[in-house]
Length: 189
Image (cartoon, rainbow, N blue to C red):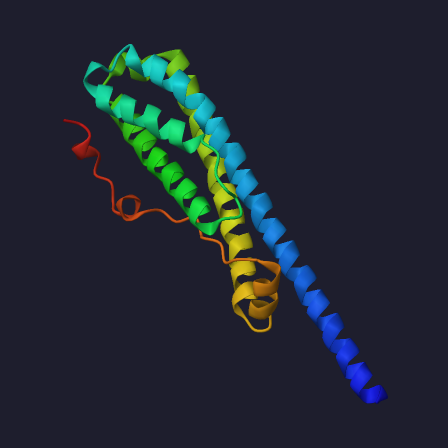
């Protein structure tokens, strides 16, 4: 009888420790996602200034500027950080905005006055710094999500995660367009 109680007690302790580990990993993932959101907010706050400066010079890029403005509005919208699909959509919008901003930065090369404007140079430098911080936040997020997903998918974590409503979260991934090599000649027409 004592042996059965001991085994049952050990099983409960092991289950609880696994549960605690899952919750810690989930919270680390949320913290990492929050870090991405902080950097995305910084970037979103920079975008209107960059667009205002660029608008003075870039008559032929109106559609790109409009597209970036629309993506900024989507990127700053709230989302459900617990819902994997909502997180995935949020990260996809952020990546699309990143692509369009990269396209804008390449387009700046076509405008010598804009390229040499001190305000634009400072805005671009700040933007590049935010992008570097965002890249670090993405790496931290993907690392945290990797640990969480592994713990959720491996037995007995899968059972405990199901009982605790801990779900597999999406990785921050570049879409297919971002994975293809960029040819600056495409933007210098």
